[in-house]
Length: 207
Length: 207
DNA sequence: GTCTATAACGAGATAGAC
DNA sequence: GTCTATCTCGTTATAGAC
Image (cartoon, rainbow over all chains, first blue to last red; front, top):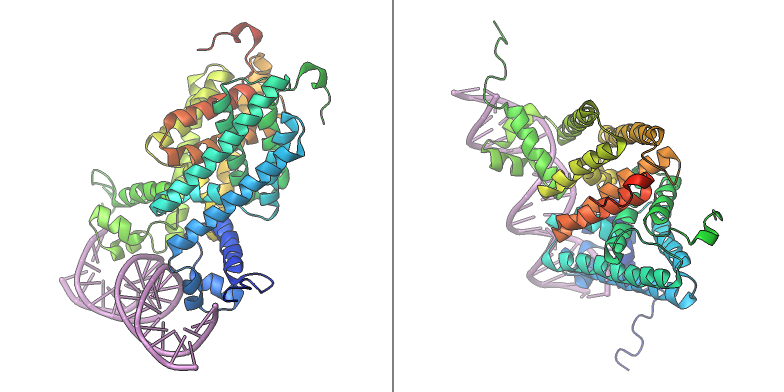
């Protein structure tokens, strides 16, 4: 029976720590929050945090790991839903829009800004996050080209890179303005011009 | 004769402080460097820095002010050089490429990430920087449309916003990879697809 | 203008009791 | 697992001599 009912609370303390740390990291950057901030919000002591995450570097690794897993799940769920490449790209863009809705930056976009100050393992995980996004996008773009739904203006992998960085930049700049419309305009223009050159028959649909 | 020959040194101490602080802010973020870092690099004491810039918030304001002025000068210089809208947009993109060459992020792109932690005056200055960039880009896009050299796929001001955020994002993501080609690919794809839809006669040039 | 010395605070982290 | 108490260090900033 030892360990029979781990995680019996409604939400795990470890998870609640990660939730708070994640939000703070997305809003203030990895160097913009402290154990004291998390402790105050969860009303526990700093040493309790250190019990769960001995070092902030380790906390940071756990943060990216969970975020990347959740992101990968979201991409898998888009695939499972089926549909054309254009609708998948719109769903992809919506993930970013939802992040902005909470007045957050993408965690890994924020960590890309903090990159020079991050411990090695966190750096590697940030790179892996972008790589995974680009691989998924590349698959979707190839599907779109095969379907005849997309006409790319540049090599597939470069287009994937431009989409990732374009959406990250749209988040980065829109957030100070607190303007979701700003993000939508940049994202729509990006997808339209860069890759979602719709097949002629749907060109005037405008939806 | 008092004040007859201010700034007699080869380079002003104040300017040298700003130079070092600027580079550190662009690479590590505004919360990622300290007075001690600047002092060590210039081999002067921390209180000497405080003589020139009593508070870090003031230093930050001076940082953005000088950066924005220099940026505006660069844009004016592009205008003075004359040429078509497409070549102006390429020159604009090159400003960003040159920043990446020094392994830096755009100062205001970095400060956009740090935005929530910045003092009010710095926030305002960051917004003004993006506004000024978009105003200049809007003028260039209008020129390009008038010339018949550009065909926009979205309203002019939205296209300008997408260019700024697209280039900022391309810097943000390319920097961790240490890959200038990554930036060039994203920037080229962005300009081509978003606005620099070249007039039919130059479409196949590919230079 | 630049220095030494120091204040005042917040950071990440540990010891050890409960 | 959580706590109080504490450590050590780095941070911005000031006092006051030169």
